[in-house]
Length: 223
Length: 223
Image (cartoon, rainbow over all chains, first blue to last red; front, top):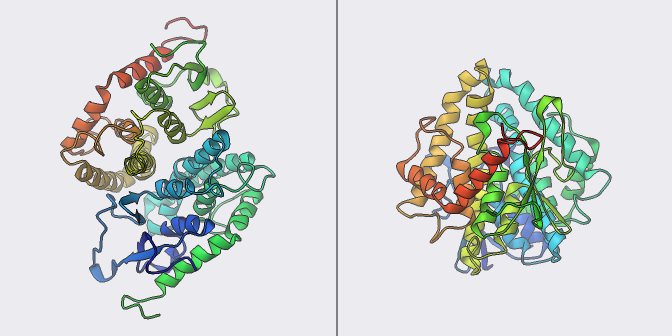
């Protein structure tokens, strides 16, 4: 297990989130990247239960994850994933063109897929059946489905978005898997792509580690 | 002027967009980055007027810009801006910590500010007064204002988000300036920050070049 208390790298997460968000909080993406290249890390869990406002000054928007390594404090899961990927060609090819293409998919996940995903998830998870959400959902779903159809066409019959798995696939799979089965239409090759990413041992280790952290109460006792 | 027909770098843009979008299309960000480091480029303008579906196979989501240089075809304005910035320390410091911090702000612009900006702009520019937008706007505005307050606190009294101008500021200014004055509350230091970015000669050159391209009809005749 890559998570231990005296590791040189620190990643923040939350001590508690509602059950629907477990396995989705964005420190998962950072844990996954670290697991892919076998880097140890320690976690620091921010506790927001019972009105606590446990915060980290390294994150300007009050979010997780924050990544610390030596004198570096880094935020934004995309920037952290890229920083980790630059350490090891298993996540980021060294040749200039494949490297740039992998980074393009990393940005695409976060700027061309994630916002449209977020618009739908906001309605389905957070609007509480409000009228604006009921009125808006059909168009938000159509727009995301259109984007997913384009992404599915770009993937085609390949296993990964470029010739092999990169940090771009890591971020894309982590983004796409926010959708629950049946929430809207997704091309079969994208569903297979998500399953392929989730089957990676590094993903499984990262997921188990995040879920394991949620299973501890604030005294570190399993709940 | 950095734009000429035999330049080695090609950037796609649109031949025409409605007046409200002129000076906002995302090829502006790429032109700006190129101008900052004095790199020449040529444009290829996609024409979508009169039902045309002029497209570029290098962009999986049917958008602009696409960036071509030698054997590289690159998409996502964030990835392109980073690729350009890696050529020159004026956009991206060489020292590891300032470099990583600049990249964090680049991602923050695109993933922590742009989506909330987009949610508001979609209502104000594209919803046509639909009921969902009327119902949703107050909460969308509050959320974006909250994010802008956090960004303003992070900027504080500095000129730029880190010690000097970087590609992170370029993307942040380009994102923030999508808001019109009065569209919602923005901290004064962010307004000054936008003005500081827009005053840069490289920004002015990029803006003039984009507006100049819109001023040509499809036969290249000024309209």
